[in-house]
Image 1 (cartoon, rainbow, N blue to C red):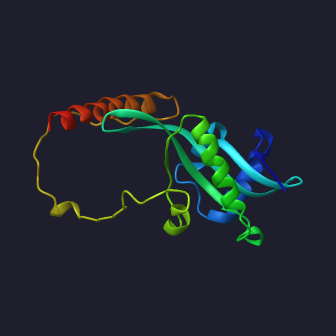
Image 2: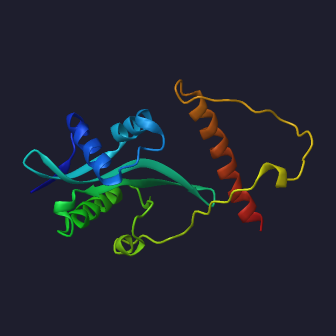
Image 3: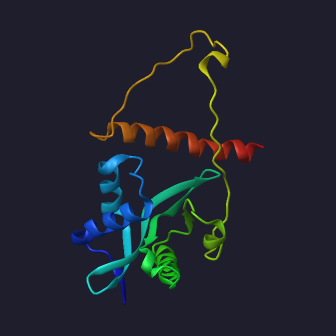
Amino acid sequence: MELREIKESEIGKVKELRDYAFRVPASGGEDDFNYWVQNARRLGLFYGEHLLAQVLTYPLSVSILGERFSMGGIAYVASFPEFRNGGLITRLMTESLVRMRDAGQLVSYLSPFSIPFYRRFGYEVFTEKVELEIPSHALPDMGTVPGRVMRLTSKDGTGISVVRELYNRLALTKKKRYDDA
């Protein structure tokens, strides 16, 4: 068994394992998935040419109290069922954490399928997702508000750059509020 980076020519194997393990289409669609898989650090455990398990690490950054940190976003952690409980994911996660540290990614986020499993690697819950459905008639009438709504697209890159610029401006100004408190 060989632990190594998954080559660009092997991305089809990543998709095959993703489709088998998650059985739900990527929320952003195939174009979004293709972008992220191209830009991720792709680690896999192979037996010959067969991909048995994988971990993708996205090169991201996060603002914590106004300070920017390099962040490794863990995604598509999966193995085929016949190889589960054999320590493959533990090997991949351990190697992924080492590579994140070496790359200066001292913060890492993921959306765990099992909180106890990922606690072994130092992860902890810091937020919970709550979904709430409120019918529009139950919301107060705010009247006319200043501003405008614009539809942006990520196809040409402008939508992403506008959102990124707004996020950076707002996230970095939060530090001033904390410092003033």
